[in-house]
Length: 276
Image 1: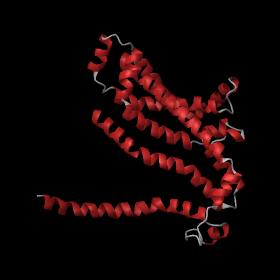
Image 2: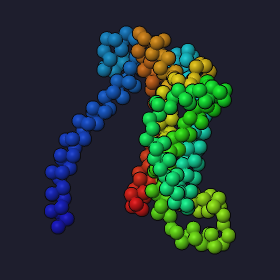
Image 3: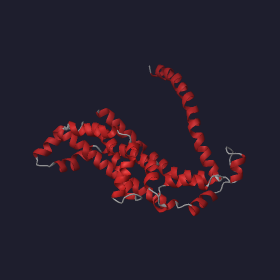
């Protein structure tokens, strides 16, 4: 029986390979082009962009760190990302917990409406509000804006939180635990898988976001990595190796982060689907 299953599975494996290999090449080719040209001179890139460099060198990386304030932009992006994710997860999980505990339909309706409103529509009102609060061109202002992503976090967390064992929460109430104690000591540890999954997705959004920084940040010392890359388009118009090198530097942290967290993403999604 097992031999028969193996024989039957071979055509499927062959078809899968025939489909996945071209897709892998299609996806990997831009990354190959990106990385390989950071190790070339301008003349080599112009002459043969897909060929291997005559000599591998890191001169472009040295020039980027010398001529572009990459370190400061990295610290700005890291600060905004970490603070925003912590706020989003806290607000989103607290909103989900309050809905589960009180089953407030009004709050659910308001959250749905907030989720359906396009973010671009709110840019002008938000700019005026931040301007009145003197938070335009500040990293703290960006953090406050990104915390609005808690609405998205709420919708992902609330479904997972509905599966929490009611007996545990009821037992905590009988023992005299208040809402905050139930949330902090019981709910949060139980929903940790979905928190990690949501945190990874939102981290990738905040790290790579361009719209909010370009609208609300103008000072060079407060720019994020994405803004530095956008600025480099004008500065290195003819120097493609420099621009591609900066792009690689921006991508590397997220690639490492995603690879490191991939197992947790899959675990959180599987746990959520099984519980749901």
